Image (cartoon, rainbow, N blue to C red; front, side, top):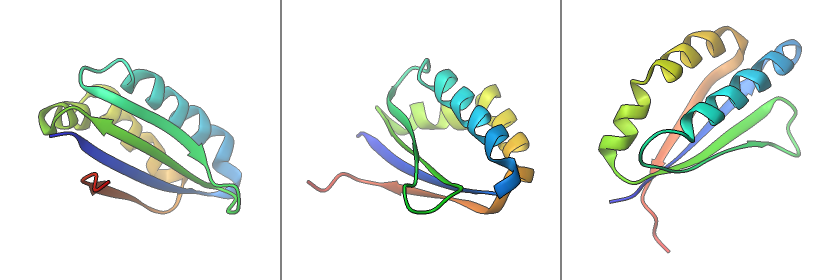
Length: 96
């Protein structure tokens, strides 16, 4: 069953350029992973410093492999001090 996620990041105002570079690198590396169907980065039009990633995976095994990948572990460690608030991750099933 296909898995869908949305992750939301609230970045500190003075850390946005570094955060964008980290997020871009994450997207580039993740798109190479087996089972990655979508991994897109967006910036909120109305709220400065709010970014989100929409992603979909072929299976929960593929998602798990992503979550424990070296680039994802490194990303989590390096993005943490740049966050204004803890990031939120929403996991969903497609309804329609």
